Amino acid sequence: MNASIAELNTLERRANALIANSYYEADTPRLTTDGPMLAGALEADVCVIGAGFSGLSVALECRKRGLSVVVLDAHRPGWGASGRNGGQTLVGFAKDEVIERQLGLEGARAAWALSVEGVALVRERIAHYGINCDLTSGYLTVATKPKRVRDLRSWMESASQRWGYSKLCWLDTDETRTRVASRRYLAGVYDPLSGHLHPLKYCLGLANAALREGVELFAHSPVIEVVRGPRPVVRTTQGEVRCRFVAACGNATIGDVLPAPVAARIAPIASYIVATEPLGQARADALIKGREAVCDNNFFLDYFRLSGDHRVLFGGRASSTGASPMQLSKEIRQRMIGVFPQLDDVRIAYAWGGFVDVTRNRAPDFGSIDPNFFYVQGFSGHGVALTGIAGRVVAQAMAGETAAFDLFARLRHKRFPGGPALRGPALELGLIYHRILDLL
Image (cartoon, rainbow, N blue to C red; front, side):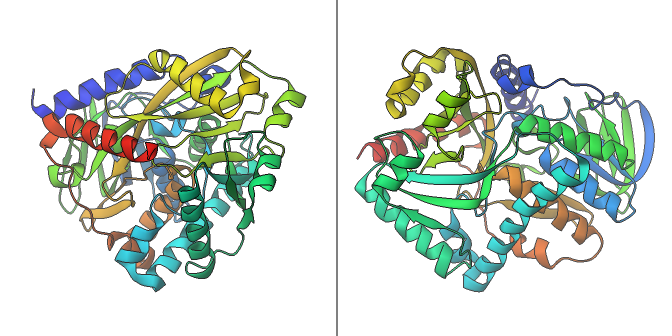
């Protein structure tokens, strides 16, 4: 077994352990979305690898253009980050300044406009396909220290004046604490367009929509090889798909599907979430008056929101080692109590986690291996909305409309150092460094 396969197997074992006590899984019945295992040979215009947000988005957009589509997933729809994440549906990018530095001001404005389109696309699909996923409008970015207040003000001014996003509203200390019942925050920015949703319900809604649109979806069908050429062949353990186009959308757990230099551009970072017992509507509303999603602007950030059944979902504690969420639930609960001391009597009902695929510069990585072999990865925590746009621009590129895809493909990415065996320790050293910076 080579190093990359061993690394993937370890990652998958950790990922299975991290999902064992997921509130999302407990709250979401899985009915017909999984699909059978692929057995035998099929032909299609497009073969999509990965049944998460990005893969299902590619599939839906290709079907709109009349292309036949097969989607393969090593597990089942929503098993990866799409079914585990914090649910924040955001405009912008993890590191907006990187986008401008590499694409220039005009390119940054175009990328930001596409990210805004991504949030609108989420709403459009929810309405069009009747997806019940607790969509809630409103997002607050908050600052915990004077330096972070200055950083937040600078970011808001750049978004408003440079990147063309004029919807943001500055909140002083009193306004911030009126919206979030915590003494921890000194200032905030309110974004009415961004918001939050139940990610697994949304993902399974997309899977059902894809099936209704004629997509063939196969679960438990890990891809072991892509034979490149004018008519690529995507092989699984039990079958194969002959196609015109391939779209690799597996992100952190895609394995050896992509060439090593491309795969090394992302690394899996574990993030963890806890869900409290239900608080009741009145007590929940007293914590976050407008029920917005909330996130601070530290490097190791806390993010939290209220669920549709009035729980607090509180996440954070990034790690490259994939520790058990039950081990970390006490620590995350203490962070939650640090924000909301009034929840000291509240029990944690669920604790789970998953792997976020991040790039070194935290900008998304879209590209092509061949003219008919595309990939999207490295959403770096902004995947709920950005994956929708990724699917759209890939489908457009397959149809010869490459402007939007080429914009993202201009972003330059460096590999993570050390190769598969050393990537984890190297990442952990980097995380420790940034954790120290957050304390200063």
